[in-house]
Image 1 (cartoon, helix red, strand yellow):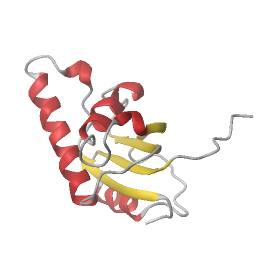
Image 2 (tube, rainbow, N blue to C red):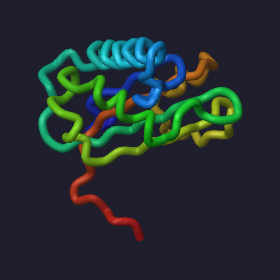
Image 3 (cartoon, rainbow, N blue to C red):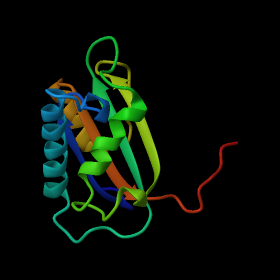
Length: 141
């Protein structure tokens, strides 16, 4: 694992947003959060992280377009990791949220083995990583 990276994991299937929480979607949302929390717990069976953190969430989707908006996919994932990885999702001070079509051209030099293994399987998945936040944060040029 890279320096400053606390955990990384994948969850198979498309992400579910909080906007999909109407019945019967609520059961799907609860199941999605439980799967995220379960994977996070496997990868982080330690005391909760303290301090400022960064999250990277990549939805590797199949088809023409992703099932949720990029901004809506993060909240259920970050919520599911509360009390599992960190105390409060307010600790996430920086986030990279990305949709990427499975089969699209990628630059894989230096890519996480977790991502490469999941891509090789060929199924839709969401990659999640929690790492140290970048301090000082470089403002865009």
